[in-house]
Figure 1: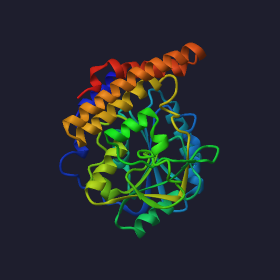
Figure 2: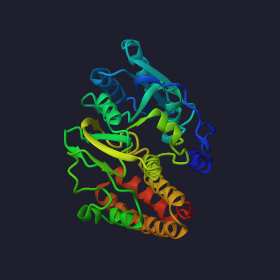
Figure 3: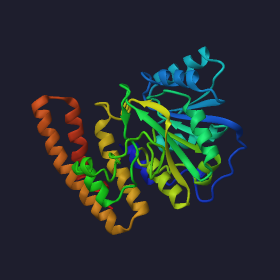
Length: 335
């Protein structure tokens, strides 16, 4: 995780610092779909095919490939050759620059009036780009909009959340939020259009000019909480975040981050990003409370998952236990 550690310690890139840069003149009505991939050779083609099949408005695609091999890039290159009518730009990276920086790099290369940040393990189920573009055009007070997210079996995933605080994080990590729904909004059916605090970063639609005005994603968030931070800053600026279920996207959650090879790092990284979010938006006492919550969660869940691994011999349980052990023992999860 040294690469991740370095990214979190660095300041944001010069492209997104201090005074917001002046973006290039966008192409009117064009939707630029930014996809940041990391070893997604198994699912990037269905994602691209769905964009080509479902999008009725003008779209382009920018794929930022953070993979450590060329398998994903080769899949994208093959798609480009067989789909010449869809503009697809491939930006392979020499190292894994992280999700937030990858999104910013994709936005740099985009030419559209609108940006749709889309995970590579997603599939458009309808003309979501047009629907969300029209929604923003009809709601000038809206800063961004997110679609309804579906599982591969067609079930609605309840992805909208309240902004986190110490109490909501406690409810979430203990499982009590399943009863109260204070953080994950589990009592909201996700079938109606409504204002929310945050939408999931797997599908995230915003005007390009506003994205640049807000300074893009904070690149100190290597992965996780970059969209929470963006929503928080947007709300602080007096704009609104909306959930729009007429636009629908299927999501295979965790295709890149929850594999056995990566889950230990991702368990730890989520807690680090959460603490970084608190350092940025809360006073020191709240950061200390969250650090204590992280530590207790790390101890409890590492013991429980180690016990589960002993019973089931499942590698995923073993790797998750390792991730939570790092959270429990490592000083990086304290202010």
